[in-house]
Structures are given as structure tokens and as C-alpha cells.
Picture (tube, rainbow, N blue to C red):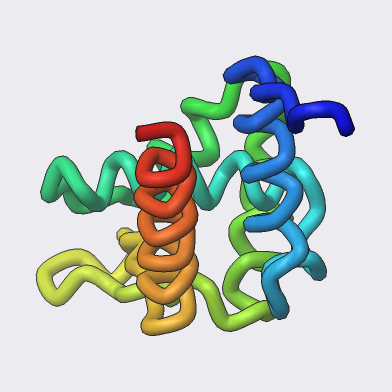
Length: 119
């Protein structure tokens, strides 16, 4: 009888990421949208207001039009909202929806479970 061997950390991480990706409705996101959402979550955690223009100008390797399309894709999937600034109606901010907050909670729970399994 062979003993189950311990998986290396990188394989555990990849398994965890695949499990998170498979959570509905998040499997409907493209890899680019998922990457953008992760980056937005980090910024939201820091308490920053995120202007749409900053996202459009700050995405390495993507044009402003492509970045905007990804934002619209996340909006259409119910993961973000675009809030109009009260003082300048030309400015919009990217804000998380309840679904984006659920995504973050699921990631946190999966990481906590993975950490508990290795302890």
C-alpha cells in the first residue's frame, strides 16, 4: 500500500486556482477579465477609488479600447458597476458588486482551506 505523497506548493496553488475558476459564474470570465478583476480587488482593498480612465491607461500590453471592453465585460457579467462622479459627470469610477465581493470571499475561503490542509 503506497502512502499518498504530499503535493508541491506550486501544484497545490494551481489546483486551488482551477477550483476557484470553476466556481459559477466565474468560469464565464475570460482569463483577461479574471486578471483585471483580481487587480481591481487589490485596489479596492487598499480603499482607492478607481477611475475608468486609470484602468484604461494602466493596463500593460492592452490598448485603452481593449481595457474598456474588459471593464464592460465584467459589468455585463454583474461583477462591477460604473459609478458617475457627482461633481464631474465625465468621470466614472469602477466599483465592486455583491458578486465581486462573493468572488473575493470564495477565494479567501479556498485559500484558508488550503492553508489548513497543509498545517
